[in-house]
Image (tube, rainbow, N blue to C red; front, side, top):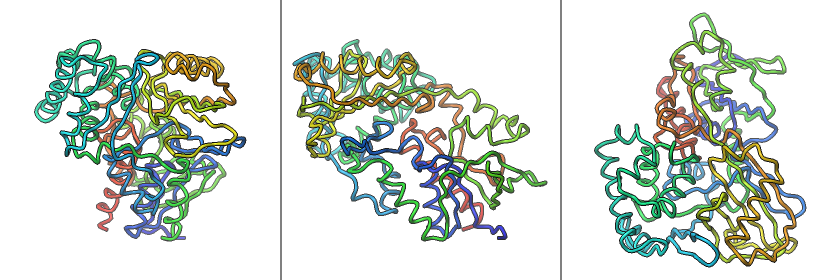
Length: 454
């Protein structure tokens, strides 16, 4: 079949690749999405645990009301009704057994809804709460007026600048930074934290809403996106392993070479794969270009998730932060989804972000850490019996969010005029999140449409 101007190959079937494919299909392009794995979803996928029937996400992902591009994508594919919106931000923070405080937004319009949450946060003294609130206001001014200064600064250095004490860091700033940036505050970028706070906490009240999927992540978007692309005349192909990109005499990409010996041509290409995978697809001459060679310096940061099934429920809270333990966050799946299992009444998911020192530990060691932290923080768990444990580690879960890596993130448009990039690691101004991935996919689709004149 002859290649036409509106033929596009998208390499990678995660959020970024499928968002790009859907946006292009809606613009009248003929799209082929190639995914090397047997299933779609990339690092944002899920599977069903056979003994309990529960869906298990590869990593514990939470959307927020400020994920406008992601919600727009889910609207496009008809999947928004699979979401649960917790309209009022409510996070229980435990500083030891029985020592709890809740961050709960007020009903005031944004951004004043956060004022009530901070002023009622009982882990801090009144003086610390006021200083915290003033620090947040000053950070928003820095974001508006001194972005370059923030871009050179770590979160820990930012705390020094804002005059935040050890207690405010331990109970508020650092848990937030770890959850959203996935790295040590001594390393993570202050500019990225400022962007997260602005979009998620200091904008409209609806932007602070926590949004969960009623179904596994794979069921949330993979099938619906694939169906839309199919209906538009495209194709989504799992188990299609791309071995390389082949160029024509003009320096443009002509075809992708598949491991099974096949080749697929197109007028434009989107690489929606991690940076290390992209570099393997390019010939040496292209990798030598400074645009691509700097990608070799991008580092990654790991996440460990532990899923436990207990013989009873041990907490009524849906979402709990642990202060001062290795384990950082607890998601009570039974409460979030208001579903009670008969075979395993308590289904809890735990997250350890920035887990560089732990990612090589054994599954038994990681499960033991989480179980010990759970029992230390929630006494009701001490009598509970663990029925099942699943440990999932993503050694390269996100790019490292340090200032140098953030400055090295590439744009969607590349020096190869028919190659475009997408992924959570592309420079979107956001940390490596689902929203960053979808934003980059939409940007790649728009750039291709502009190139073709569609």
